[in-house]
Amino acid sequence: MDRCPRRLIEGNDETMAHWPLLSILVWLPIIGALAVLAFGRRADTARWLTLLVALATFVLSIPLYLHYDAARGGMQFVESHAWIDSLKVFYALGVDGIAVALVVLTTFTSVLVIVGAWGSIDTRVSQYMAAMLALEGMLIGVFAATDALLFYVFFEAMLIPMFIIIGIWGGPRRVYATLKFFIYTFLGSIFMLVGLIYLHMQTGEFSIAAFAAANLDMKEQAWLFFAFLIAFAIKVPMWPVHTWLPDAHVEAPTGGSVILAAIMLKVGGYGFIRFSLPITPDASQEYAWVVIAMSLVAVVYIGYVALVQDDMKKLIAYSSIAHMAFVTLGIFITLALVRTHANADAARLGLQGAMVQMVSHGFVSGAMFSCIGVLYDRLHSRMIKDYGGVVNVMPWYAAFFVLFAMANCGLPGTSGFVGEFMVILAAFQDNAWVAAVAAFTLIIGAAYTLWLVKRVIFGEVTNPKVAKLDDLDAREWIVLGSFAAAVLVVGIYPKPLTDLMETSVQQIVSALLVSKA
Image 1: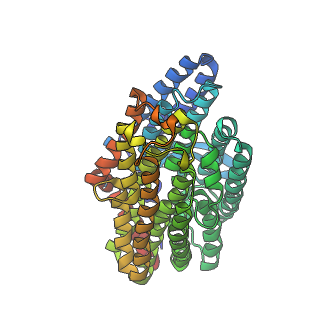
Image 2 (image 1 turned 30 degrees about the vertical axis):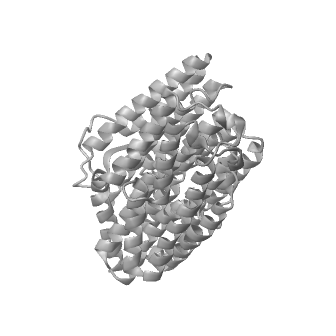
Image 3 (image 1 turned 135 degrees about the vertical axis):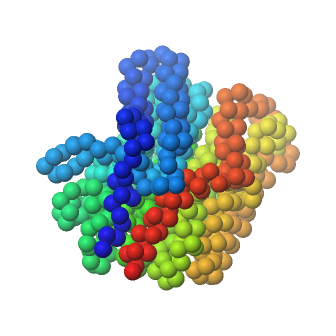
């Protein structure tokens, strides 16, 4: 029996058939990066050219959302061209509702990162801007690839610009952080490559759809499941392979931290949905408890670790790990519900909650790191003890900071509440104790976030340097205001986002139920 219908991955879209929209979105930033290197010798030229390319990419991603037929679901905007004939490798692109949401998140965040770096990056500006554009194109390629080898190429290639961004514009320990980041993620991807080669030997091609339709026994699925688990768990990152992330965040420039938290971590969650669920459905259901246990450890243990941090960036980095644990919890609670209860409605709720959490975390974590960057540009310190009473001199900044902190706590009315609530609700229908532990972490999250707010924003001004700080300028208003709008829109009215992904989520869950039968 076809465990995962090929149409869910290959599609047969005729919408805008003559427009290679996905190829444009992938290659426009990459070609733009080359143009910035060639013509951006002056810093201002590099900045404006980069912003023009990033804005054009974002504008072109809007039709992807507007013209995607969410009611039909499946892969749309499909492109396929022969690449390596002897191995049946294709340059194949396509997006479902889940991928559309992540592509638009990528293009939106990239514009804000470019604007945010306008004044903070003043050395080797053209190289920095080019690296950001190249990274954007490669991330879009990851979310759009429907050929496994093409996915792997983008998956590996995106390490290069991030390696450069941290290694050149990072902090004092940037070399250590970049090497740790690269070794961890590259090691994990080797396991994925071995799995892809094995699947190619079984199917004769590299199509993800063909992999999903392969007739694999439980032993084969188990080995492949753990190969994918290692690769994507490092990318998320999950406990206990998370230690590279705090170091990378602390040493990265603000823009690097924003992209890393808002977009790159999502590749791990997306990989579970695109590879583990359709290709190894039986093993994923059998070993879902492993990932659920790792997720629960992360949301509790990492929360307590965040409580004792004295560096703002490191605190938010640990917060990201805890919040991304909700993503993996939602994905694998779906599998647990399919396996033990065959509860399609609850299973869909868990997977959709994981996706909403991914998008929300992109906005919230990007905003929090941007806020830290605003203070760092002024005082050149990330240490919490160097601040206090910021609200007295930067009231508008303080308002944004508190809003994003509330979203980080999961306050109703913000995007941070929606996804976590959906995941906890789905978990409750599988195991009340799992739901209780997950819900308890909201208290821990509120503790470390509000503790940060109290020490940085409120109180009396004790540092004379803080007393001289200026409030937000126009550029910072644009960045923080855009993030605030996104956090509030998704928090107050998430229906457009959930509708976009609803059919795609239903199709994934239906395929899992067919596999179970």
